[in-house]
Length: 215
Image (cartoon, rainbow, N blue to C red; front, side, top):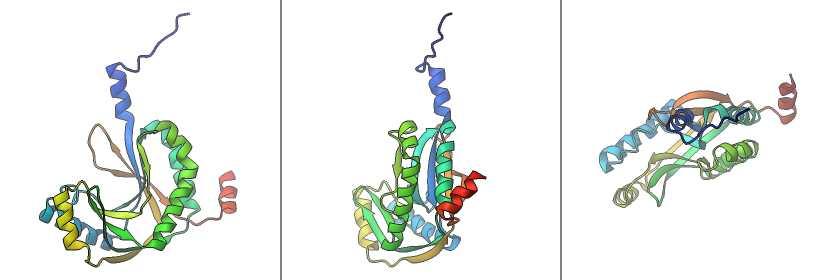
């Protein structure tokens, strides 16, 4: 019996794979009032400094991002759901502006809340990272510094001017966080991110979660 060889380098095969490789983003969103406030700042950055990567970005805090074949997402979704079910709802607290030298300005998260979020990311990573490393080895990222981005890909002149004018500006907001959201977009079509899953934060104890999972 002759063996059959599938040429993964054939253009049609590569195109098919590409169509099913999607970008996923796990986020905390914000309430509508804070979202409108941040959006107005982002629009100002676009008008005043020419930051075209500002106004088109919906305010969010990214916990994890990956590019992965859609058939391999079930395990990731399972892990996200598990972490959400064993995480308590909490109060997000935002305070002031900050920047990264590589061209990003953002709204900072209070230290206590930031540590709490990093704890959630740590649990998430412990649950799904082995799978992510296998199926998205070079195209994934976990949150290491919780923040809400104002503008990114700024050149030096834009960043210098914006930082000079905004580093002492006040910004304070708080809102309840009750769910994680999983967003997805196609790499081929260039679509905007769309919500595909919502994971309510339920605060179940580990024992309660395991018992529920059994049934």
